[in-house]
Every structure is written in C-alpha cells, then in structure tokens.
Amino acid sequence: MIRYVLRRLLWLVVVVLGMTLLTFVVTHLIPADPAKAAAGLDATADQIERAKEDLGLNRPLPEQYLIYLRNLATGDLGTSIVTKRPVRDDLRDYLPATIELALAAFLVVVALGIPLGIAAASRRGGAVDIITRFLSTVWVAMPVFVFALLLQLIFYVKLGWLPAGERLDAGISLEPMTGMVTVDAILRGNVDALLSGLRHLILPVTALALARLAVVSRMTRSSILDLSGADFIRTARAKGLAERTVLYRHTLKNAAMPILTTLGTQLAFLLGGSILVEAIFQWPGMGRYAVSSITSVDFPAIMGVTVVMAIIFMLVNLLVDVSYLFIDPRVQY
Image 1 (cartoon, rainbow, N blue to C red):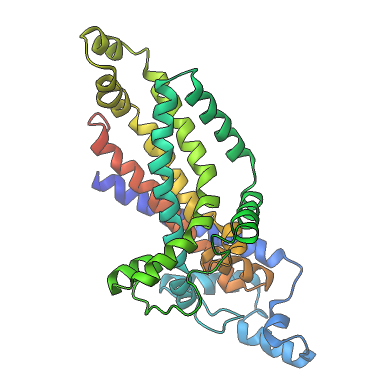
Image 2: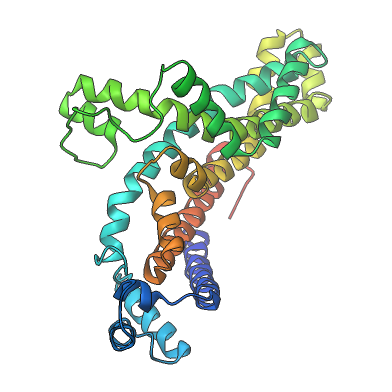
C-alpha cells in the first residue's frame, strides 16, 4: 500500500504541473493587461511598462512559466497584483472559510443523503421512494445560484429569519485561531459567536448541499437495489433474518464502496465548487477570492487557487481509494 500511495503522490505532482501549465496558458490568452490593473486606471504608459517589468510580464512566456515553477518548488505562489500580499498568505486567510462551509455541507449530505437513499430503496415504488426521486431530480436540475437567490429571497427578504451573508452578526467579535468561526467559537467558549456562526451557515450550506445530497441519495438507493437480488441477500432472507438486519448488516455493507466513492467526489466538489455560493452569500472563502482574482486579472492569485484546489481534489480521491482497504478486505494495492 505504501508503494501505491507514493505512486499516487507522484501522479499528484504530474497533475499539478499539468494544471499549472493549462491555467498559465489560458490566463495569458485573456485579452487584458494585468500590468495596467496593477499600475492603476490613471497610469501612464511609462508606469504600465514599469509595472510589467516589476511583475516579470515583459519576459517571454516560457521563461515566465519556468520562473513560476521554480518559485512553486519552494512554496512561493507569487505576490497578488491586487492585495500586494503573498498569495500564500491570502490563501491561508481564505481557505479556512471554504473548509468550514464545505465540511458543514458535507455533514448535511451524509446525514440526510444516505438515510434518504436507504428509505427509498427499502420502500421501492412507495411514497417515500417517489418523493425522494422527484426532489432529487429537482435539486440536481436547479442551478445552485438560482436556489441560493431563492433562499435569500424567502428567508432573508420576506421572512427576515436568517442573515443573507457574511459569517457573524455585526457587533460580535471573535479572536481567530483556526479561521473557522464555529470551531474558534467552541475553542474560545464564545456561545454568542457560535450561535451567530451557525445561523450564518444555514443558507449557504443549504444551497450548496442540496444538489450533492440528491446525488448521494440516488447513488445509495441504486447501490442497495443492485444488491437486492444477489445470492447472499436471498440466502440471508432464507435463513429468516429480519429485513432490517439484511439491509444494514449485509446489503448496506456491501454497497458501501460506490457510496464512499460518491461521497469522496462530492466532498472534493464542495471544497472546489462553492464559487457561486460564496459570491452570492458574501462568504470570504476561496471561491470569492477566485472570482475577484479573475475579474481583476490577478495572474498569481488565479494560479495559486488552481494549484491548491488541484492538490485538495487529488488528496481527497487518494483518501477515498485508501479507505477501500478498510471497507473491503478483498481490495489490494
């Protein structure tokens, strides 16, 4: 297994290099001048040329890319054109908010998606199955930004029950430790900040989780139904085992691998695909940072976000593959 993990880590390096090359080429094809954005709207031609020289944009593209790779090997992601700070520091500030939002949404997906799939499979063709499949279709088909705006319209504008954005109510202060509001509030023993942080999580988590929840519930239902006619399931029933025992001890255990694969994919999506939700709810995470970087043509920031998200996606998939060993002893690497 150690050789397998090392081989996958080596492929991670290859994938990251490919992602950096692709992102570098695409960003430099954009018809915009980051030097002009760095110099300012009223900058003269000399000031723009000086900015190009400072940013290294006056060098040939292959040389710029090799310099970036050299810096990347030392952990240097460059300096943001907009914030004038190291991109590494910006990502350190923004990443915890995205992790908090993604993990909260993932907990909702696991807590609701798997039970809904089990309930639909155990009552195939019944009311629960029909309602679950209908809602899953609606949630998957509806664009996430539409659902996010509907949630804001209903629960913030019309009812006034929940906040529309940000992470804490005005007037509540919390000294950061991990960068995740709910975790920091627990560590600090700040009940007001914890309750406020949870309230601010409800709408973005709901908007982000529902489509993923639908995917997990459908996969759980499908995996269980695929095994319902298997020989070992019929044998278990023939022995007189209770249906609940057959479902949870035999069927669900053997259906765990495709469900786990789906959960890993959804977690990676939640970590990297929350751009629209963060923008709508003014959530200060990686998605919002990526949007501002793209609109301001901030090349180092765009490259930094790409590298970090590629690494996260690959590590999540590696973790899922390794976990197969603990679920099914027949799996060998």
